[in-house]
Image (tube, rainbow, N blue to C red; front, side, top):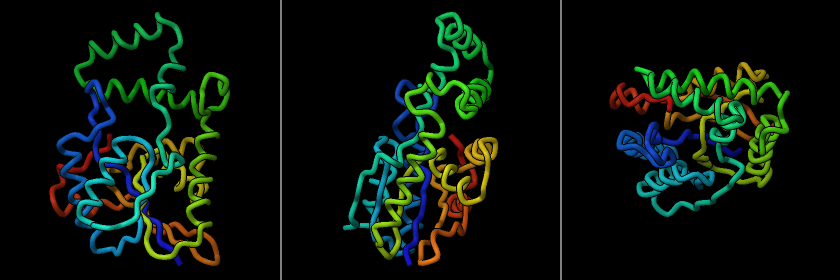
Length: 226
């Protein structure tokens, strides 16, 4: 029997020119995650192709030691810039969003409102030609990534450092959630949370979702969702 631990990357740098790097808080989250993983007997680590995923995995490997590492693009996140651009394709629409964001007193909340509308359009499936990776194609990519991981027959414990959307896709498949359920799950996944699955003769079973006790035990202020 194999154990798969899906780990959401540590906090990235929201609001900065380069989002795809860990914030100082994210680096601390990753270090605490690494300490948690050392007690779980990790046999291999996989991460997607994004730098925030790579950096999180790297901090863990610094403590885990000589553990095999694989990069698998199947575990990359959906392209949020593509989704935002498709939802406001004209210069006027983009300018209106930028003006709204500039006037916001709470930048994160304003962005979340805009982003939720854009993601709802993406998941609806009515405008798939507007996206280089439609929602269902994203779901299939993640589903195939998990199937390939399980089909290789490896036993022991595999850590997959990925992102909230990908983890939510796996959870949605196992719990039978629709697109609304996927979006709801995606909103509440904590950075460096652990979602556990076991793979055996009877298939893949989801055991736990969004476990972040390692952060709560250290400092509840470390809980972040973006």
